[in-house]
Length: 114
Image (tube, rainbow, N blue to C red):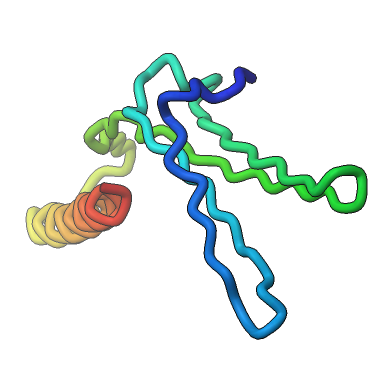
């Protein structure tokens, strides 16, 4: 990974809390995410915090890049002879219902990821 560019840092913001005057320090990171930030489809952000040699903490977050969705492909192979034309119509309707559910599920997934 690479160390964050100093121009991306926001803060530190100091906040004094309680009677003891404890100091809470917040340092933010703000930058435009580009394709180059993703390695193998993932963006990883890691935060390291320390107070001299007394305290050390690390946290890592990972974000997955949206992958282009492909429309569902459906192939029907029918080797069985149909006994009547009504069987074909019923089979066709069932097929339509299944494909509609698949498309609806994909649309819901796309909506949730954006």
